[in-house]
Amino acid sequence: MEFDVFTLLPEVFPPYLNSSILNRASEHGLIDVRIHNIRDWATDKHHVTDDEPYGGGGGMVMKVEPVFAAVESVLGPEAGCPIILLTPQGRVFSQKIAMELVRNAHLALICGRYEGVDERIREHLVTDEISIGDYVLTGGELPALILIDAISRLIPGVLGDPDGAMDDSHATGLLEYPHYTRPAEFRGWDVPEILLSGDHAKIQKWRREQSLRRTLKRRPDLLESAPLSEMDRKVLKKIEGEGGNS
Ligand code: ADE
Image 1 (tube, rainbow, N blue to C red):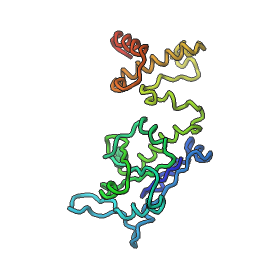
Image 2: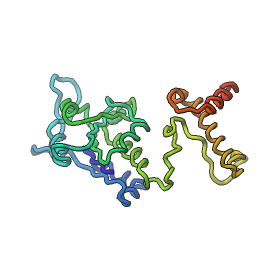
Image 3: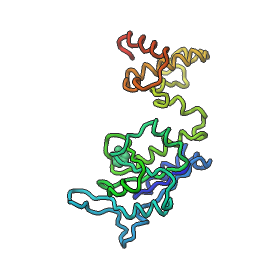
Image 4: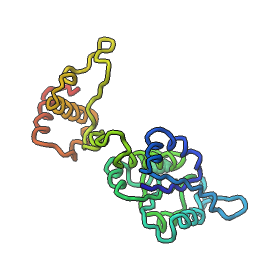
């Protein structure tokens, strides 16, 4: 999958992209992330990319021409891929949106900076706007990395385990069950007996119940849209009947 990222801070990307799983994904040709400095397309002597807002008011606005020039020169005049602006005004990113976006072979990501971007970028260049949550950052660079990370790990082969992303929190509509690894006992705290039993059917059942328990306790809102079986509903009733659903 290809990503073209347009930013005023290109230097923040390589340290993360060149680490661990995403680096391996690049080396194996599973992702290709290309970082473009919008400033390279500012034609004036000082390569200015921001200006004061028409109508006055505080803050600076990201200029329209360098962003159009950068995107059109990299993607061509008829970009065949989604062009996503990272902005707190976008639709809120989720596992569902990551699963939707991974179906594209190519994505362009524009990182906003300053107080905002010239509205004509929104109206005439971008095809989608995404926020990573209801808080405001200094720019779209961290959000772009978050999208690249969440989307890339859904590409077959990126995670070591081919089913690695299947049980993730949110992938199933529920929070994930608790994990344990060696040692079986630490400071008197034991790993649940059932996980050592080797009985896979029982372990599956236990994990599903733990997922339901956690989701009910921490994120009951998720249960409204999670795909639940008859058995899940019975288990939830039982947990609710216990009172303190820990
Ligand atoms: N830029 C600034 N804040 C942001 C957010 N929450 N999501 C996406 N882009 C942003």
